[in-house]
Length: 176
Image 1 (spheres, rainbow, N blue to C red):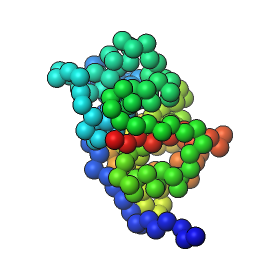
Image 2 (image 1 turned 180 degrees about the horizontal axis):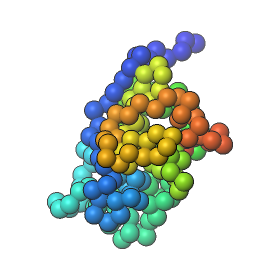
Image 3 (image 1 turned 90 degrees about the horizontal axis):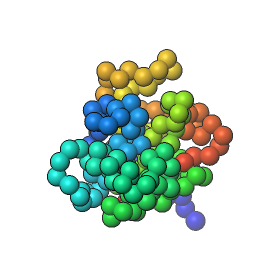
Image 4 (image 1 turned 120 degrees about the vertical axis):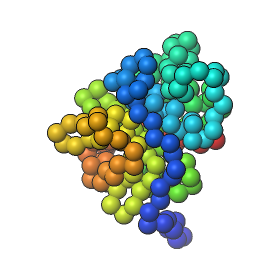
């Protein structure tokens, strides 16, 4: 058996979405914004023609009684919008890389904030993952919300420390 061959670098052209322009809760909708970014990339059909996709998903979640804080409810939203979400609590970085090679984004649970934070994996290289962070650019001193969070490069060490502090790696493997 031979290991899978992967390119050294991959970057998927996923539209970056900032949570800071969300109408309902600009500092608390990383989860819905990240899911919207993935669904928009996969060309999921919207149910309305007004506002941003993330605002539509927020209203949809409320109307369905879903919690935007629940990974299983986020997966339900993805499925309700016609896509697949294989949510895993024990994912590996290799699985994430394989998914990205296949051309699909991932939504990754993390602790870049004390409450938890959802980011979108959009690529990788030998040193780390390329991330769309809907809140801006993170550093060890906090967030720069005045900077774009598009295609940030987070090292594998940082991903392990902030996304898997207890060894669990919670990832939404989203596809059409």
